[in-house]
Image (cartoon, rainbow, N blue to C red):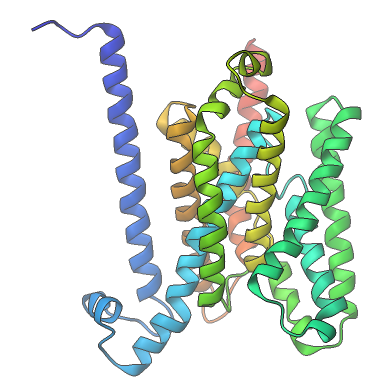
Length: 350
């Protein structure tokens, strides 16, 4: 039997590491799911959870809490957390910059402004907005801000200048949104205050179904783009040489990232830093940048981080509930600062 070459050993070690990371992510995600649905103002014993979930047998109070409140909320947090991480990954691929994300570039703020404007200006005429209508209106706002960023990118060649432009447009969109919400009179519109700061409170099965459809289709499209993404990461010239239509590919990246960010903002409001931090952590954990490996891991880690942050938002100051953006800022901001310091150090060494 031939001894393994260094290349084979390295590949075997890399595969083992990838497998270990995936097992860890799936285990942590399952544990977070169980803890999130069991703990709250009313605790549901873990030994009764399987019966409540699979057979719907148990006390009426526990069934109502599980199926009408906690289960849709936890599932929505996981789906949208994965979507947010994927959106950040696509934007970082497009701009070739690890510090960009839907929140930092103002894309989430644009989506937030669009949803708030449609609800406030047209709700009296159209009645209750459907879930798909919320996603579409959020997509329009997200894509409008993305278009502005792309136009700015032609003039602002410095990545830092582009980031500042994105942050400024985000502040403007947030300011206009707050102005619209503050001037609203209807009680349910004024309730947008909580949503505009990020929250999974009030999540229902209609949100879960629509987000699962939108995010599921988007995830499949992103996954099928793994090979073109891998080629694009090698440079536009290389991607074109292997048959990738760079212009169409870049449009697809922007459309998918905007749609994913729009879906998150429509149902949960803006959520900060996850879109930046997760792709960085995944690449570090896997020790590879191969898209076919990184993309599913990004989704899983995004789902894990957002669901954990949502659980902390519910429990840290219970019965008072924190906004999800507060918790994600505490978790994500230090990671982003570390990324900036690491990037500066690497530039100094080179």
